[in-house]
Length: 275
Image (cartoon, rainbow, N blue to C red; front, side):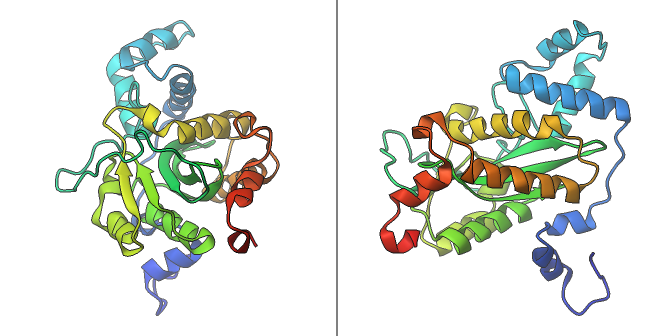
């Protein structure tokens, strides 16, 4: 798909194809079938018991006949980017040179679409290997505004998702994220500043600050990912695209009075914007 001899730069080709630049240069290291199977089960247990660390996961897995040691489970958790009480990829560790912004949502009444957007990253298992998924959600309506897949945890696919959402839905007042290095990076924060978007970041180790997108991950994995065995990144992208279309336009939400995120989102917009 990428032509390294083409006059168009690799970065521009990657943007046109909707993939991250890091994915083009990345040389994947093979993961054994046994470890891939174990990682998938760790991910399932982590969603069910987000407070479980490597030791508890080891003990839970032993009841299922798996004899993996604590250190090996910890190594796989690091590869997946998950940790106890923090149900998201390990982007919570901000780069020491990056500025961390204050949390702006405490006590804030969120009453309309495009008032607050939130982003997060999660691990997606495939039949062989895995990818990372970033999604951007409107806090008020739960609508998924944009998403991207990447085989690396770089900032490029996060920036691409943010740009896509701005182009399609306009500019929010606030964007809330965790303190991950992708979201504290100069490239990401400068994009927000260029559009006069206020930057909000969760307190360290407080996944409940971003609870709505955490609930999205539970829905995505139980209703889509765990029912499939994607055999390629393109297959994962196509199937997830269908799921997010269903999630936005057809799946009623109890927290939205049984209407869909699309209905809730567009109903709250001024008439000219909704049109």
